[in-house]
Image (tube, rainbow, N blue to C red):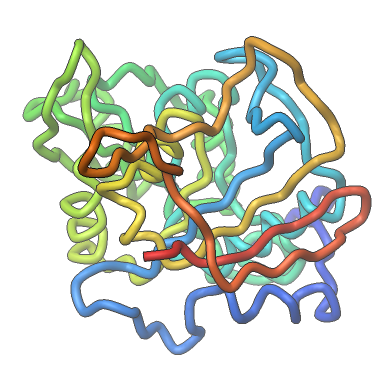
Length: 276
């Protein structure tokens, strides 16, 4: 198969060194015996916004940070987003680093499994979706759809299986009309399906859910790109639920430890671990 490298990205070895302490071990080991190494990563503005408004595709990362994100994808078995991001962006969810499978190398080594949290099967994907086009070109893997439905639409299951994807049905509770992810159950399920590392990339609802007090202990690494811009009011904001002490006083939602800051082009990359 002819490898298409026209849109391949370069991320030199010299730029990879600072990331290594914050990435999954290359030998495939995990901190826990039943859950994958879990990295939370996203790009944000100075006012903690991911996008100008819900559903609006917003570019924040500079070219160096964008290449970094694709390198991070190559170091994880799975890359996870919510259905809102899939609907807004029609994403490719692949890795475009030169030398990775489909970008100068045969096979799909280095390409992560896309995972889309879609409780109600809202994402009406087709063979025209960017992700499936990349699959057909040998430049990405088919997605895994995590849903609360026990009987998802048969035509979507057939399309997924045609390209090597799958549907994972997971029990989810419903609060105020919204499905609530049990992150411990989800990560255990992904581990049981062979994933030893997972990169959670967006969007806002998924990130805030994972950063809720009940779930932060499941995060092994946090890598955030901060862009030198304010998006303004009305954006999609990273702001998880607060914690409260025994007297009902508000506390910070979460805090990082072992924090490192790295200038990267015009952006700054923050790496850290969740504080217990």
